[in-house]
Length: 371
Ligand SMILES: C[S@@+](CC[C@H](N)C(=O)[O-])C[C@H]1O[C@@H](n2cnc3c(N)ncnc32)[C@H](O)[C@@H]1O
Image 1 (cartoon, rainbow, N blue to C red):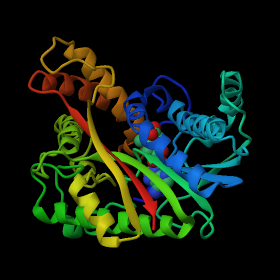
Image 2 (image 1 turned 135 degrees about the vertical axis):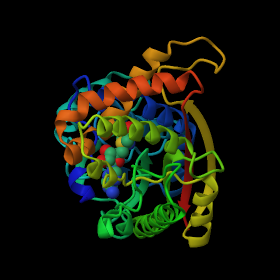
Image 3 (image 1 turned 180 degrees about the vertical axis):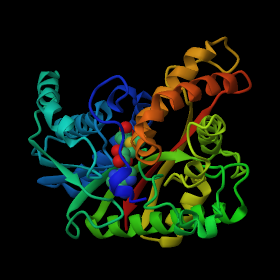
């Protein structure tokens, strides 16, 4: 599977789009806001750039893309008021893979500017926004040219499904019956996913180290695995329900078994300990701070775990989140005809699961400074 060709969220602003269904991911941006403020403030005070270069890696399209952009502008504006310094110009790069819906972003930029201009008590900050298609597992910028990198909910997408898992030698799929690390995945599958993430994340850090100015900063938020057991981590449980939904379609002859056996997600949710160990071992960045927070997978469920809730509605909400993320990949591998059916089954299966326990998402926000 060529990741750059198939990995993207559902574009546009329709009912199933990522833009209309990214409230879960918005929570990470809100939780990380104090760390964003710290990082932008420190860059502004310590480096006093006349031109500040900021990049959002894996920006997708929709309100979250603009939330990051607007937050940074407002924070720079506040800093300028605080210290009475000259207002810098900001160059924004919005990066994602080439299939991302960049057009939607460009079409909404005027509206974002108008909203910012209408804000009270903010100094206007000249800013210039460009889209930057390309993989963040390759170089994106000239050496030492960026002051701040932001990335939210993106770097758990690894650069490829580990080759050995995809190769399917002798018709014996290594990860039979699973689309990610699942309860029946053999240890070698876990190891291969883990090694792929370690290689990718180390490489990502080295690339960003080269591109950042000295003392430049980076704020990364992404899903992590909280449970000790790797086979039943939170993401394994959630993707396990997608697997069960696909499997029921195999049993009914709607999709071929071979199709399910050869579909694996280019994704890995590490533990916080794994992430900290990689950053520390590599030694290119100082960890300024990190924190983990948890939310329900249903973005509209902020209730206490023991409070009464509507599990059927919650299943539907979770299916919308999942569809907005997985639909392009599912459609590419299985064909678009199965998509409605699959996510209806997923909604029902989630509703059943929620009667036992709520689905949780843990997010790590990690603030790093280039040494
Ligand atoms: C779940 S979305 C997150 C979007 C947005 N940052 C947010 O917080 O709502 C993940 C995004 O990362 C992008 N992505 C994944 N791998 C990438 C890569 N190697 N290079 C650039 N973008 C990538 C995907 O295309 C997708 O748009």
